[in-house]
Each structure stands twice: as structure tokens, then as C-alpha cells.
Length: 117
Ligand SMILES: [Zn+2]
View 1 (tube, helix red, strand yellow):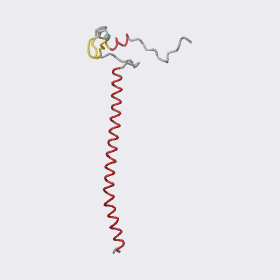
View 2: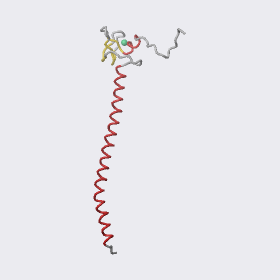
View 3: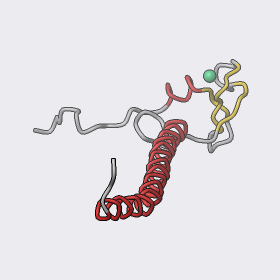
View 4: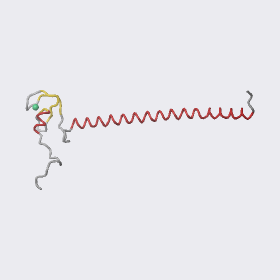
């Protein structure tokens, strides 16, 4: 099988093109991989940060959204039991989670029926 001069020239030109295009293609794929990897890691990090912020908010606020006083482990001065969460009240007393929530007044919400009408 003999190739003509024109066929040989076309063949060489195609190989030249391949030698130029192949590194560009590999570089593009590597770049795309890096960008996607960074994007996925960023999204995972953002979700983890949001989860941590929600956890920290739940840890420092009650169900109605009111801020809770600082706490640590200790003995409640009201019921005298050990608790992993004893709140340090502004008046100096130490109250456990159960006693704290039983003494807090319930928050009036918008869903409560209005009596004045
Ligand atoms: Zn208590």
C-alpha cells in the first residue's frame, strides 16, 4: 500500500494537530477536575458550616428562639439533682434544664386566638 505525497502530507498534518490538541485536551480535563473538586468541597464545607451554626443556635437558644443563659455541668439548686446542663441565672442561682423550662413563661405566638374581637 503506497501513499501518495498528498496523502502523506495530510497524515503528517493530522498527527501535528493531534500533538497540539492532545495536551490542550488533557490540560482542560485536569482543570475541569480541579474546579469540580473544589466546588464539591466548597459545597460540603458550606453544608457542614450551616449545620454547625444551626447546632450552635439550638444549643444557645430555646424552642421559642429566646437566648439561653450560659451553662455547664453541675447540681441544680431547685431540685438538687446532677445535670449535664445547669444554667447560671443572672441572679446567681443555678438551675437545671427541666427546672429552667418549667419556670420560663410561655411566649405568646401569633397563632394564639385573639380574645378582644
Ligand atoms: Zn432542677
